[in-house]
Amino acid sequence: MSKKQNQQVYTSKSIREMEHRFRTNFVNSLSGFKGLQLVGTISKSGITNLAPVSSIVHFGVNPSLIGMVLRPDTVPRQTLQNIMDNQCWTLNNVLEEFYPQAHQCAARYDEYTSEFRATSLTETYNSLKAPYVEQSSIQIGLQLTERIDVKANGTHILIGEVIEVFMPQNIVEVDGTINIQESGSLVVAGLNSYHKTSKISRLSYPKVGKGLEVL
Image 1 (cartoon, one colour):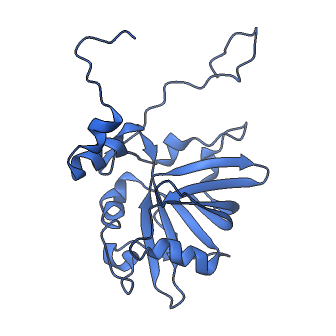
Image 2 (tube, rainbow, N blue to C red; image 1 turned 180 degrees about the vertical axis):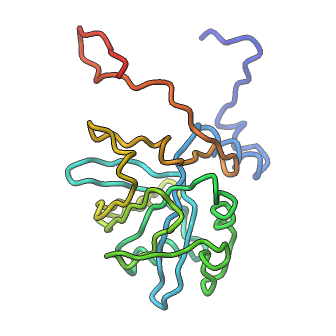
């Protein structure tokens, strides 16, 4: 196998032997830029919770499913517990205007403290028993359909059906594509590096024997 000049090679052994915090940052950055969402939930006792999550993935369109990965519950995980109690949660995009508050939501507040109040973000509700972030431009309500417990590392995959979506009408293009850049959504690299997006182009659907078109 040819190697580029000055290329560093990392093996599973060398990754395991990294200092803990270095390894955490390294592996979290490895998969590149990711969309970031604030996950909104509420406890049985009425305490709201916000958690920044970047492991959000599309699972299908019929039904419309979105999944996310949550960390192992070796310590109390309020987001996981609240979703299991109420069977629903919200996803709220992060904008430049309030990304420091979104980042602060990752702090380890106790179960009696609402991240909304701690960061001065505003909670709002619609049909689900889960709070939305009023400052977000795209808000998605999900109903739990499946939980997958990953034996390899104790993480949890939660899959939810899209129940409701709130967003500006002008960011939905004529073919149904949502213009994420126009929504103001930020992306994240690793655990604490926030970035804006810059559109290059949109390409036509790929077909064998047919050239691509720039849309």
